[in-house]
Length: 89
Image (cartoon, rainbow, N blue to C red):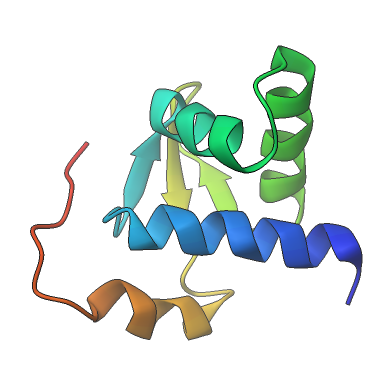
């Protein structure tokens, strides 16, 4: 797999570990991308494009994205593990 794929997988893993099970807002994705890859708006835009083009996230509208567990089912056990409260949009 490509380097970009592995980085997108890592970002999506961080999203799931943060407690998002179904949908995530653009603001929350931006926060995670700032921590993982940097805060430049071009960097955030680039990684968001990579996440959607590789199918990790599916846009619902301009500011809400669905986590694609159908395409990457290995992320699902990670999402269901733990006793903590899951975040809602």
